[in-house]
Amino acid sequence: MSDQEKPKKKKLNLKGLWWKIPLVIIGLIGMINAMSNVNSREGLPKCGSSNAKDTLSQAFDNSQFAKNMNLNAIEITGSKELNGSTKKQRNCTANITLNNSKTVSALFKLMARDNGNYMLEFEIQE
Image 1: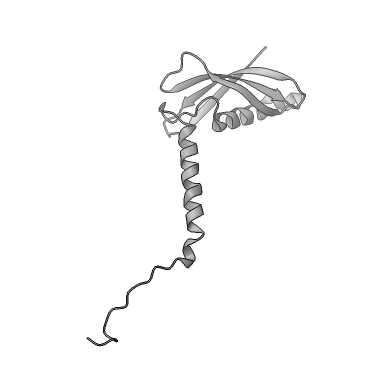
Image 2: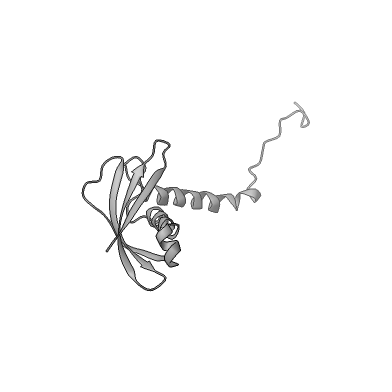
């Protein structure tokens, strides 16, 4: 075989790889973080997870009560799971710090939906 007929060996091109490695690492960290916020209960987030806190904050901010009183949730703290949670429902409590500097206690439920999502229902305690 002459030099012209030999198949060329492919060289590993590392030039385009430099940006892919950090992207893969960030993706893995994101997956691990997402998995740590969810336990085995049908994908329901843990009461203290950022997903649950964000959902509670949005639900409060969009409630008719908050809109009428011109209130917004600033911070969700003290989240914990209550007894009575099931595979399809997680019962939780948390404190909501409002834009008027008051803190209110809230009971909330995370309920699994058939499509893999969840629904949040909350009640402010007096």
